[in-house]
Length: 189
View 1 (cartoon, rainbow, N blue to C red):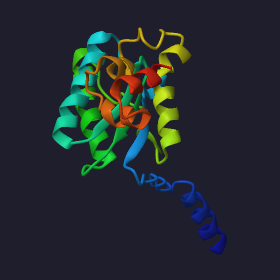
View 2 (cartoon, rainbow, N blue to C red):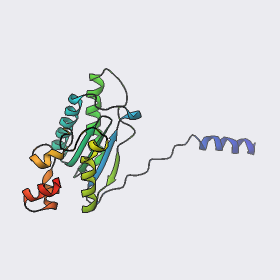
View 3 (spheres, helix red, strand yellow):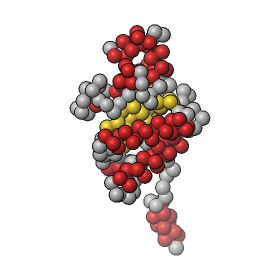
């Protein structure tokens, strides 16, 4: 009987799922977030989808009060540099994800998940890492061999140069120089 109970306990251990590891909390509230398509599938099939994702992000940005410092939308993933305020990252991405997936599933007459697992996030707590992540996000179209940085329409790079869009450019530009024109010049180079 004891051998049977021991064998049964071993079988049960294989069924038990370990809880997810808690996300690291940023002291600054700033995170580099990556959202990927399930099974590496596209989450944007056309420019209308990309536009809808940005509109969804802008709507919840106004509603929930977070800041966006950089973004890049590629076919099967998104990079965001975001600062949470009162509302936690998990709620922000739940709202954006639920809204966008509803749109995508209706448009393409599909059901089920669109995003792979939960989003990935890395804390950004130093100025140097903020510089690194901002540049990394904006260089993604070049890395993916899709476009040059300045010609890629679906990143926040040009928000820094032209001064419009959903990106909160002032925070980062002030780090480069107190004078806006000089900050933009430094950003470009």
